Image (cartoon, rainbow, N blue to C red; front, side, top):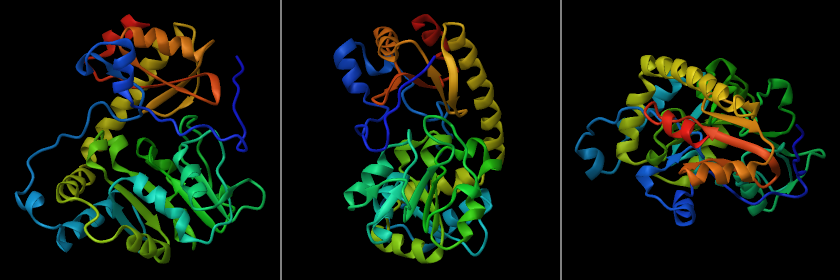
Length: 320
């Protein structure tokens, strides 16, 4: 089954997963009754325990920030000669990265996460694959799941968005960020399932990371997020168990969708991408049963689904 995708010259709208309020307004129901599979967020989040009282009442101190950075360096095996910056979400970093260099030409292979193009365009960059001054690679790509390699890093300024790479750490390209002009991005919200914590990281060229730090200013990350992030990044056992569960659930979802005629065409262990006869029809059918999915303005046949929580599979099966 063939699908249609626009070229980079015809940019898709800035659509996103989520938007459950709009779905409820159209198809009814209550938020608790909906199964939101429109994002790639782990449905079994890292357990949030108690926070130190001063995490809420005091400005984040240097020790808390250093503890988070140390945990991140160990978890992602970041070489000592690379800098790490914590920020209030990877999206904050994405919005500011284009200002690190004079506006020029940037290559952002499509289809992919659309905030990168929006951020570069807002800073006056031209999006083109012709002799680019910068290149953005989402690794693994959203929504296709494509993995890139060191040979694909062909521009002076390279952005490697590894927001979904924690499900396949062996594929990480953080080591490649040791070369000047390179930045790798990490998202805490996806793999740990805590998007509301608003925590993301930039790893790479110390000169570029220092400029990014100036852009976001002091105390950018909240005290609770610093505490939670440091604890989660030190919990290797939870990460290992989570990867195994996500891999099994991704296989289960594929089996379920293939039995209904969908074809697996990509994705990761946090979301799956299917080719269907009419994505809008599938979205409507699922929504009538209060299951929220994701379709794309550049394809009439792409349907993306996240993973249900362990106690919500029956709702998806009934909707299909």
